Length: 157
Length: 66
Image 1: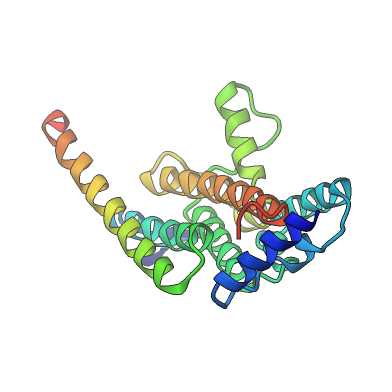
Image 2: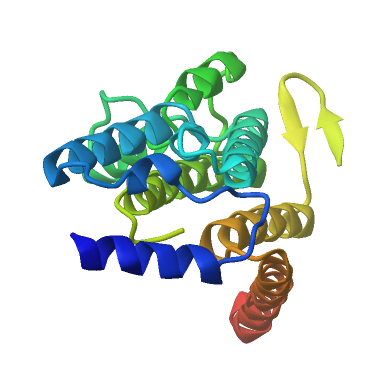
């Protein structure tokens, strides 16, 4: 425990201040490991549900803003290009994979469904590009949520 | 970039490619690096690689398109 605190202090002195404040709540001294683990999962879940929230809760404002903007942009462009927003009623494995990727955008999935009132049009290249944008947004958000989890555990900053 | 008739955003393949590369590079730069200078360098390098690999692959596939 003492060694852990010493190591943490040495890390704090080395790091330079940037826009992203270090994840202070995740490094609370004396916090039980189980509690930290639980909080890390909460951050990951929050990050998935609302892109960027997992980082915002850890006061990583720059990352939170960029993740939210990037995922939002990809979803908006993808849905506006009439990409395929997959549903759970897909008939084959590719539809299921697409649905999982799209669900990675969290609440933005509903936003995409709302934007795409006219339905998907993958008969043109635009719709095909849009499908890729939507899937990428989901995978990017899952990556960001995992990053928030790792940061909360103190493995990344 | 034009808004096509009806509900649809119309981007050319290259415009979509540039937008995709820019957004993903910025997101990766912010997630992967901590210091501002490192981020900027990572974003520019990642963006350049996206372009280089994308255009390179396009040229590799070009003979098969005929």
